[in-house]
Amino acid sequence: MRGTLYVVGTGPGGPQQMTPEALDAVSKATEFFGYGPYLDRLSLRPDQTRIASDNREELDRAQAALARSASGVDVCVVSGGDPGVFAMAAAVCEAIDAGPPEWRDLDLVVTPGVTAMLAVAARIGAPLGHDFCAISLSDNLKPWEVITRRLRLVAEAGLVIALYNPISKARPWQLGQAFDILRTVLPASTPVIFGRAAGRPDERMTVMPLAEADPAVADMATCVVIGSALTRIIARPGRPDLVYTPRFISGESQ
Ligand SMILES: C[S@@+](CC[C@H](N)C(=O)[O-])C[C@H]1O[C@@H](n2cnc3c(N)ncnc32)[C@H](O)[C@@H]1O
Image 1 (cartoon, rainbow, N blue to C red):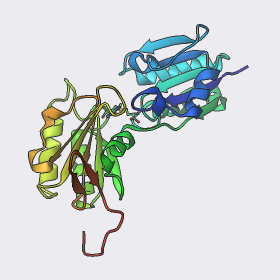
Image 2: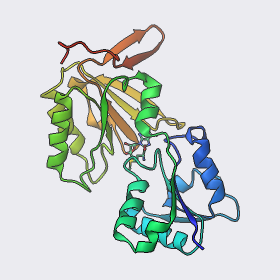
Image 3: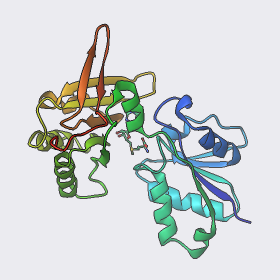
Image 4: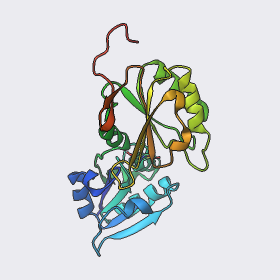
């Protein structure tokens, strides 16, 4: 008998940002594979077992989870945010693609989650109100030249850009270079949102114009949202500014 393999996301922040569907999947599984800090977000029962691993071991983790599921265990693979956005659902699919034929016959249930850019956008207004894209700034899995080319093209196309994985100890300069590229395409006044730890107690939202955007404001828990030329800031007396991108665009705007 085979088990079911659930792939869930915890949402970006507190338990209220995890979907009921993901919580239901968690209640059905008995073994949990994931990066330790993500597993820490779950309230597991005594009969549920954690198998924590390093964040860089995604393919190994996916293979281990698939092997346990194939042996009859109901397994849950846990990501932060949404499991399909720069996260474990793709690693599980890659493992199935390259793995033994019997893994294709497993019951795989991927539950959608709240991804970081949505939580950041909701806190600040509606910067994703018109067309947008998400780009991971990590060059661990793709060449830096691919990233810079995509940044230039999507900025020229008028898309709002949500940058995931903007900076880390191993990747300290990439965000500064990304801002330099975007400054050659976008107006200096374009709003840049540094959405840090959205939905968590240490959440911090900072907005600055692209001309002044400082990579030091970002850390690994930050999603950086760069507006388009149409993104606007509404000042509100005694309240935080709202940032939004209008839903309508005239033929002359771009
Ligand atoms: C490996 S990606 C995982 C994304 C995740 N699967 C999601 O859907 O949000 C990790 C990146 O997500 C972003 N991130 C995750 N949680 C966040 C939060 N609460 N607030 C802001 N950004 C967050 C950061 O850019 C971080 O470097």
